[in-house]
Length: 525
Ligand SMILES: NC(=O)C1=CN([C@@H]2O[C@H](COP(=O)(O)OP(=O)(O)OC[C@H]3O[C@@H](n4cnc5c(N)ncnc54)[C@H](O)[C@@H]3O)[C@@H](O)[C@H]2O)C=CC1
Ligand SMILES: O=C(O)C(=O)COP(=O)(O)O
Image 1: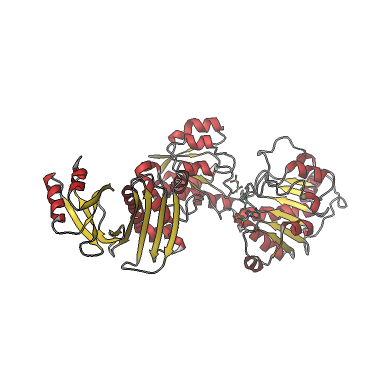
Image 2: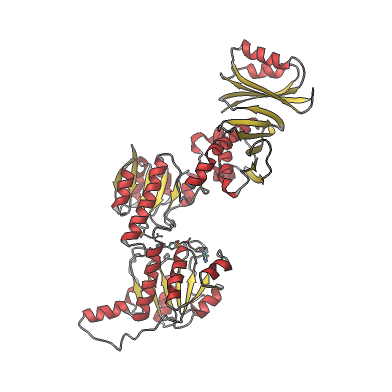
């Protein structure tokens, strides 16, 4: 039975789902060393933001198939290391959107009306009505940095509070911002004009210290900053100095450069509100993310695709359903063309033809690469690491799409250049789903792939087919099917044979000695 390690606290419903297919061990609060020690036993790892999945953990996880983040941000996981190891990383892109957005809004209103301090004051038996004069958010400018799922929900609610929304997001179109009732601006203008600034970007090298020593002086002295995205997007030391000097009016922080927050001057500042990374901590969000991620782990352990993988291209169940037979075709052809080209390929051209010439069919390119590398890497290559392995081996992959249809509604053409020159194959599916190789080195043929195959390039002339048949017969090799393709009579031709038995040692060189045979290749699929 598969084993899953759950290393952060998740809603019990997640454990229930995982238990359908695996032994589940919930062990929270482990150190990196402790995880490294036990991770070799596990097929899957499920976590939230407290566990840091380092390269060392990933590399120790020799059986790991999937790492599931019960939340959005995967910045605590070394995703490139997981990709290289062929481990799928999944998250729950929408499960906690509302929770995080509502937390940011709660932080904004708490800041503007001093709710936490006023609460403490009353509980300390005081009645300080003049100390807690607030500001209204109505008609104020809210700068939203990152207009994705959380940012847009914050914007929608803030608009209904009567706020004007300035948004900065270089990956969002003006049309989308208009739809959301936001004015798309550059960061300079957002900093200069906002009364409140709320951050909703992922942690990336570009967003690191987006707010810091250089940007804080560009803001209004009355600005209040809310960070419910990630620690490190704000330079904490620069923020503390700006708050201490009164350069800005306040800040509300849910996330920190170091978590849990250690010793920090932030705790002493009266114009700061702090929460311990609670953005996703609602009952509803925790149920959502636990179900979403546990289901994906369960599916992957059952050999099914994951719907929200962050390191494989769009293999959602509906795309998978449509492409499934073609994935097998692309992989078989990749394997075939790599053997024809003699391994050590430096380029692979993938042409998706007819109904496959769409954006959705990107996984077919990955499948072709996986097939191409399967001789060299065997089961080590999978849909997750195929592209990166090809890149690291210096294989140039060129994709083209041609929507015109030929004899089949959809077909795949591969051309590889390797140590035995450039070779190409085209393949398609019959209406019953059977694979056919329809073209070999531009010669039309029609053969099903089989475990053992023999291909020849020869001169089209009487008797040659008989000679090859007799030679195979004399070595007790049974022919399952055979096809000859030629362009002109008595010109060059190809022969493709599916064999029931492997070609015995020495037979290939006998075949190449037959007069008229220019070249012969065996292929094992
Ligand atoms: N405090 C908490 O508990 C939670 C924190 N989060 C954090 O919130 C972040 C945002 O979450 P979602 O809205 O769901 O993600 P999302 O992917 O829907 O939105 C992120 C937006 O940021 C934009 N973006 C990326 N790089 C940018 C840059 N350099 N400058 C400006 N915009 C940029 C993207 O175009 C995208 O629109 C997550 O990455 C996560 O780190 C998410 C959930 C809970
Ligand atoms: O989903 C996210 O990105 C979060 O930051 C939530 O973190 P958590 O799962 O509550 O530790």
